[in-house]
Length: 512
Ligand SMILES: *[C@@H]1O[C@H](CO)[C@@H](O)[C@H](O)[C@H]1NC(C)=O
Ligand SMILES: *[C@@H]1O[C@H](CO)[C@@H](O)[C@H](O)[C@H]1NC(C)=O
Image (cartoon, rainbow, N blue to C red; front, side, top):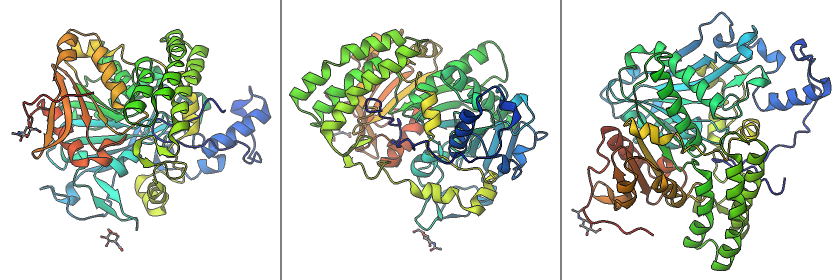
């Protein structure tokens, strides 16, 4: 427990001691194969964590729970939002939706129980319906995309009095945007079968692919729009995996052709071997640790690097071992850093979550909101420790390996990072992007940084060549759209249009 601190690549959440009441209801027959006491405690733990709704809750059914309901059940939302939408489209005509998709390739799908459902929000663009379709994935692993919806780039924010207020910099201003709770067990997504937990990127990306197929069947009018995958943090794993999965699906004509144009990773974890090597350097450069600490912490790195190599693309035990070793680098830095917020080193870590996101849970647990969303009495879990634990052998996998093929296919990649984030810092991200081998790598690596300006002011520094771009965002931590909403929206808009360097300054900028 000591050496493996369960920090979410998005949120620190202390694992609840799993000694919660085991006085739960009778064991259902379907689980006969397992020892009963194990099953009981597992079930009560899981019920707490949302994966398995309690038996008594099955009756509370939402329309999505009906086995005869279609695979995708979506409802239109009519949320009261204060302020100006800033759109020419009348508010009542702006399409806001929430839905549940019944995942097909799951154990739960095989019995006629509630099944395995993926929850999502879909907001049609405040601009034009021809705007690109964007999907956002929050990391964790196990953290809900509603964190981004309400605190970063969604159409609205939650006021302290639980009113919703239009977000002037919501990404729905320039895109039709989907926020999905995944993997199974995250947010409002759930399964009745424990075996539907996902342990790696194959399962995660297959589910996402199935979801997107169902989504576009429901919304065929958007199929011709450009399509982009975006997200943050541990989604540095999910995003490249999803892009690869879609590329394969398209090549093999497995379903509807998805018009994938690009993918963007914000403060992500993509290539752990390189990124874990950057922690000490970043911490030294930012004055979090001194030279002596740097020297001693750097000595751990070769072991971490070797562990990651042994983990490779298919390891199990070695992946957990390398995670423990590599995280000792991070933990050593934290020990010296005191109570800093490792998502934003300018701040202190307040409470166990480092940020206060309590309004979101308050909002989502209101009766009227639950009714509107169609989630019944299902518990909302902002970050699921169970999903996190399930993905433990996935953590050290290198997701950079599939990216060059996508670049050669001219699928764009934007890697961006807020400069004050420690946990997925810009330095580690720049290093893996620079060392990636593809046909344009020599030019990209040598390319100078140029200013990324928003309304005439330098908002970051940018490096770009062909389909690949890297942006270091000023005055931002881990959650760039929360800290720099206008810059983040400009970034998305320009990147999708293919002119990230539209407003730039010829002066090359020195870095490092
Ligand atoms: C709730 O807060 C918002 C923003 O501060 C304010 O505009 C609104 O009037 C408040 N609503 C009520 C009912 O107090
Ligand atoms: C370019 O950047 C330099 C240095 O930051 C600044 O002095 C100059 O005004 C900028 N030029 C334009 C056209 O923005």
